[in-house]
Amino acid sequence: MRNQKGFTLIELLIVVVIIGILAAIAIPKFGATREKAYVAAMKSDLKNLASQQEIYYSDGNYSYTTASAALGFAVSEGVTVAIGVATSTGWSATATHGGTSQACGIYYGDAAAVANASEAGQVGCG
Image (tube, rainbow, N blue to C red; front, top):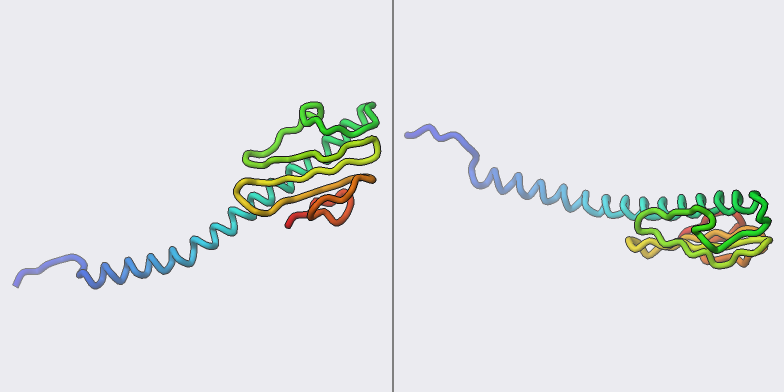
């Protein structure tokens, strides 16, 4: 008899099955994490927009603006921010991301509430 070292075919198949089961459990968890990151990016961008609007207002303009360039505002990669209304007494905006079906919104002052925003000055997502 020869002394053969190595794994049998059955041992290798068992290892492949175990790795497959672990992958089947882990992949959905990573998908949910990615969506949470997209929502966090949208929330962050809307909070940054709120800060920029207040700076613009207090710099002597005494009005809010829909022009992102005038605010010096830049969005995160993949995020689209739309400033809906901007007057001397309020503004509203929404944010979307191509990687998720969720959207976030914020409004301030007497601007009409936007989707998912239930309280003035607070970012809401859904």
